[in-house]
Image 1: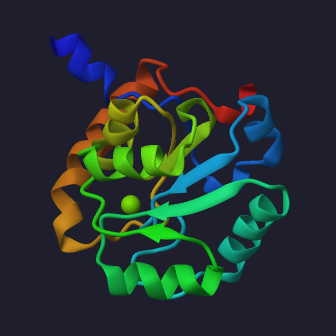
Image 2: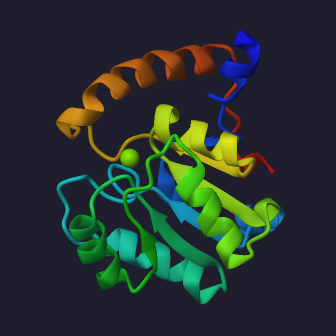
Image 3: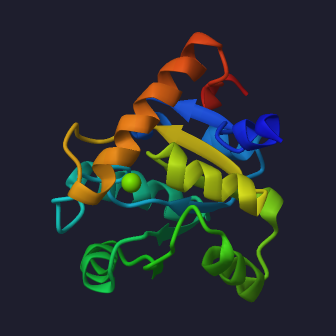
Length: 177
Ligand SMILES: [Mg+2]
């Protein structure tokens, strides 16, 4: 039981720097659908619009026929403003780690789970959610050290789990495939 719970915390892959994710990595894993968390994954939570670096990063995927979505727990206004400047579809109030809303989204769009990679900065929301959905996940380091108030407790726990996983060699780089 506890082992099963712990397994839900382990990401499929890890990268310290999100920008190190390449088309080659995705091709090797047969991934053509990316689900990105927004806050502290693609940009700091206080960036209302995407940085130039993130815009270029996303455009490269789109140019290579990778479907890109932002799936966030944050509210509509925040996600809408950000994603409209990237011209990518989004889902807000996702309630990660709960899988219900994203699961419906996957089924509604007829996506094959084997082709999806969820990218996020938090074990307790993004990674647990991906594992519950039975899709691949990529854990990255948070964009900045500061967080929204509601994220602070999760981040404290996340840091401890992440440290243990690193010590035990449980974090596998996506670039090694
Ligand atoms: Mg986040």
